[in-house]
Length: 317
Ligand SMILES: [Fe+2]
Ligand SMILES: [Fe+2]
Image 1: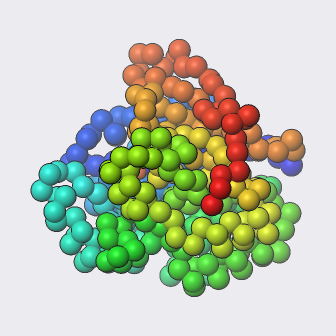
Image 2: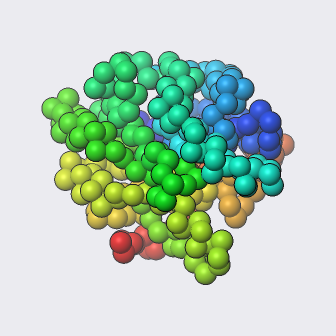
């Protein structure tokens, strides 16, 4: 096969209004990927903090400056922040559930698609009206984009951060993964929500009250059927974000790479840029730990995956 190098980034949380240092960090991450001469960049959701037009304008200009507004160079998928936004001020803690309740999630998906329209060109989709799921063929690799942002539900998804794939999208995903066009391809699924248990990657979430709330509001519903599908259709790897750490793990024989900590790592100020090398030997993931400050960029250290191979484990359900 023709080798392919992919930079996997996630969770930029770009905002025109809040925490503008995220813009600088995202720019640095893209510059770093560019300096390595990667073939393709994948960003697995939460590209913006609120999915506002001004946020998208900034994100577009970052991708354009890096020469990435092109389907052959960039693949993006949507995250919960791109649809429902997030809480940024004390007052918003009280108003946010109401905001999620009235959010038109379908309209937000359309806005996301329009903001990054060039990257969806020439993708295989059920129809032009449906953005997800899609498949993008890059030589011997097929990237399959899935929207895992669940619709608002007063009890199951009160603040919009839980995940899920509705039945119709699941059916279309089955069709895509079973398509003869993908038969000889290395299938890499690209989505936002995680398949690991939060307490395995964020020990702080294990015992505190806040951790318990986080576990209830950071779930992917319907994980089991997705896992079964990925395993049956021989998905090579699943790329995601959502939890802001970077790691690699295996579930039900399927390999997962989380780049949620690429720009906003929960435990470190450094950027954690995941580089995937896909070739005849398989697919290797390296996490490059890069100081966020431009002056120290040339001194970057390239480290193996944050979770050592020996620690990779089959997480229990
Ligand atoms: Fe995020
Ligand atoms: Fe998220």
